[in-house]
Amino acid sequence: MSLDLPDGSPPSTLPRRAFRVVSRIVTWAIYGSGIGLLSLHVRRRRAARAAPAATETRIDTLDVPGARLHYSVRGSGPVLLLIAGGAGNAESFDELADHLVARYTIVTYDRRGYSRSPLDDPAQRVEIETHSDDVHRLLAALGAGPVYVLGCSIGALIGLDLTIHHPEQVHVLVAHQPPVMQLLSGGERSAAWFHGLRRREGGVAAIAQTATRIGMRPADRRSGSTVSGERARTAALNGESFHRRDVGAVGRYTLDIRALEAAPTHIVVAGGTAGRQQLPYVSAARLAGRLQTRLVELPGNHAGFAQHPREFAERLREVLDDEQRRGPARASSRAG
Image (cartoon, rainbow, N blue to C red; front, side, top):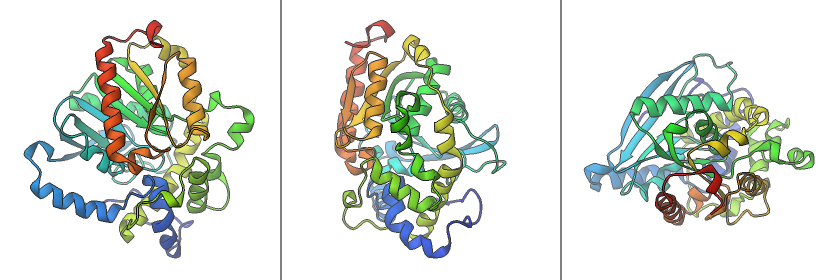
């Protein structure tokens, strides 16, 4: 699989000497605590040779206004769209998807401006609504819907906005620790996860600091995690894209909670078991309260899908099965 970088060259704020730091810090902070991307790639290539036809991956691109999206589809069964958070991309969910493909058709993609989804204009302003419109167009192009959706962090905000504007496309949304800034106090906002990215230390140091603030520690990395220079460079570029575009998009976004209350979609708000004192969990708990729905817990912290992919997948299947048994969603009865 080729890996095309969005801007063609590393940004000036990330000199070559920073890549060694990136391989140690950004890999776990951006892609999730301890995904060894190089070793993961090797394991997946070995597994692919012995995998049945149902797990073969179809890779394609989709032109959307202002960008071209890279996406992949694999597995069988009902469609489950996975939307990455932070500076993650389609590969952020690889290990999680391995435990889901027997039950679901897994769709992943690179958000515009990340990895293999280049922008037509690198200076364009991107909003949460821009990302959710991209997802709407992707699902429409695939002829999929209504589908299951798991969104993590900013991916959860994108899923929530998709539910507001295109509820007919979403059967069940699991919003894992969405950063809903309007539900945080002024003091909490000043310490919130994305503010570290605005500091002048630069993207790499800010991402590491932010990861610590939301409960992701270097000790959470799996032993033996490794990353190639090319993938470290991609992670660094994605971190800069997140710093330049999506941090501001999260801060500017106001979630229409009334519209969510009226949506027919099953909305599950989730928090990580290892981060109950962290702001992403607090934000999720407050959103669940506003929607008068239960807060579901998933293993790990803000990147539990990467820390504990098997356990996370098992719990996610339980949640989706439970929502399926509940039948048609009704906004007035979500608290049950």
